Length: 364
Image (cartoon, rainbow, N blue to C red):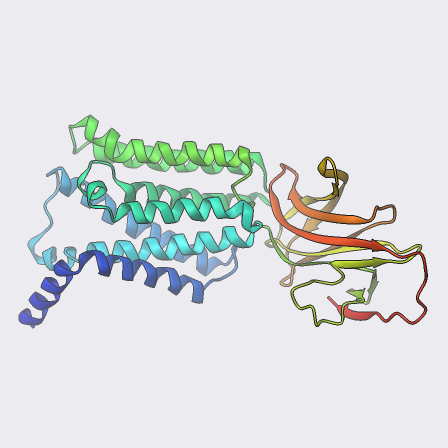
């Protein structure tokens, strides 16, 4: 048995970087396969457990690097594999939050956050970074802590906006300060604490603060489940019946994104938005028209109230009767201006009424 352990340890030491990346990806895909709803109790409990284990590993590893902690001999063999556990748990949490953020924003809004995570993960594997006093893993852990609070706080409060965001920043800061206080009792080198813990943590919080006001922090826990452009929407027996000329062969379109407008036609926009139970907030349906000379111009901002508790999401619609021919865009935004999703469509007007045109109905 000892021989097997020795061989495994030797193999790990010879392939440390490759195994770290493999376990990171393993944690990433594990969460892809086991993704639960944002307000799922078991999911939240799992996140708390992962954060506590990660925090403990980073805490004792930080003490060990500054000779303020000695691992008990009976645990030395297990401690050698701490990096694998750390990478797996980081991969799992970062993938979870990346997926939640991707679901809660259009690609252009969330890609910056994802790019930041990927950049930090790659930088962490550089030898120069590993040998420096800059602890990238601390930065990644602070991202996980902030992401956890930025999801949990809106779920508990029942709305999104500046207040839940600032509370998430404060809770993350308090957590970081608490760890700083514990470490300061055992490490006298204050510069090491500032460089290794406070600096990466503060940088992450400042970045998130800036990202929020730029509009790059997705409005979790809200997410668009479905949206489309239609010629008619009716409500019957608690269902929404949407009508479009698109028979479905243009599967990349949702409804009539190539909108052929006959006289007196209205444009209908339908949205299905997920929000947790007991959630009560509103979103803005922001209509844009692309002027040939001035570019995208706002034409309407229509509020739509949403409330949670329905597994398939809150459903609602808006219509527009006065419109011009050309390119249009509708952005579904929170009241503080963060985009949840967007859809593009083109309007082509025809002066004649076609009595034979066919509509295809879908029930939501």
